[in-house]
Length: 590
Image 1 (cartoon, one colour):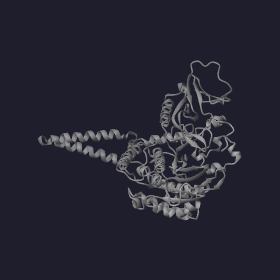
Image 2 (spheres, one colour):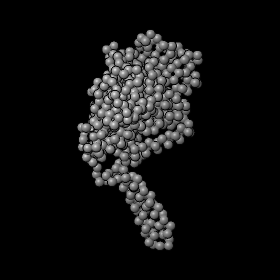
Image 3 (cartoon, helix red, strand yellow):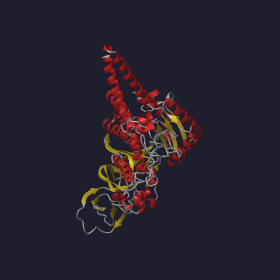
Image 4 (cartoon, one colour):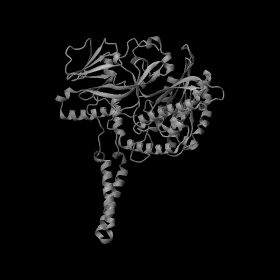
């Protein structure tokens, strides 16, 4: 990979003045100093530092991710802390450990009270975004592209700044970068992905092998587990993640890519306080068209596509499976295939070794379309001509276990090609390597799950240890309860924060704030208040019941308090959706 013609700034001295921020490069490249006005957020590149530097708070930051403009002020998002997590094609990769918002909102002083109130609501969402996990960057190499696509870039594209080479669908800060792009601040434009990166070196016998996994989350339909399901009308699927497994040995590099994504037609599962809300297929007649768009796009980007559908054939998931299978039928061909594998029926909750049944059905496809391979001279030997697209309902737990199995099989094929493994040998024959590989995929699954559901993946003990454990099953129970709480009482706000950062809701365009107009029930609905009333009424009913033998009045009071308890409970159940934490922004979900 050739370096971009101008090096990105990897370390900046931030000087905070009462009226401006100044970013001074301290990494040896000082031909441009960035100045940001704290009143209106305007940016400019200055040739030298100001003469008077008193009264400045000085800190170090590791890059500017971009700027977002709200109703009144603008806010600069910078990298406060980073961690070196390994290398990709010889270049260091960093994980963002901490973000910081720098407000440029001095004009608030002359704003109306209503504007100040609205601005405060938006900035609260931005502050929540500082906790976003799984952000990775490189100052020297384009990590938005898989190895094969990176290798295929022409010299003209390789000479462009990194942000112009980037794959837009995986560029997490695409929207935030716009103000910097407008000001032609190429050296400050750092492409960032959300996903996962991990690498390890381990021996197989006497041979040292390096394995890396890179996950790239698509930003087109990004969000939380219950508020981003299915696909939009353009065919962009929720929780769409490209996972690339790279193995390096003796100067050679092999890469294998697979993807996951929600069932790609328009459906939803709106939280309503029940443990498992019902699935609703929206505009069923549009499903074949949306599915076709999704798969034609995959076909264009990756070549052949093998869809592996892991949802249950019967029950509530069965409706999704039937619609998916029916929508796939018109587009099936040698390049687009569909396979249903009822994970729960075949594997149950503990027999995940039965995934070998699935592998037997797709191994010829995997062998035909292969993987990307570079020899020790960096020359392409073979390329990957097709992918496997895996889904369950969440595209987390069952999908993680399945993808790790496919990744393992492909790694063994690659290691045999390198002469590291002999015929009949498997990774599990080398315990140290096998353990590192399991941990790699378990960590990958946990991080992808945390970003979408708020908790680590379920069934992670099988991925991590190769078997189900009592501790893992207990942990799954706790994580399932945590998901229930987050889905019902936290993810609506998180979804708003994501939409704001990704530009799916633009404040300057939607100045009327456009949160959903609420009815009477939704306006005053509070689960905490309702729960408190139910609890108090129940206690009062018990207290009255204890005294009911001595007084008819207490018996009547017991009936009254019990009726109130049951009435409030029935009301909350009937209007469950209004008692959850719902997104407020009027965005187009479909």
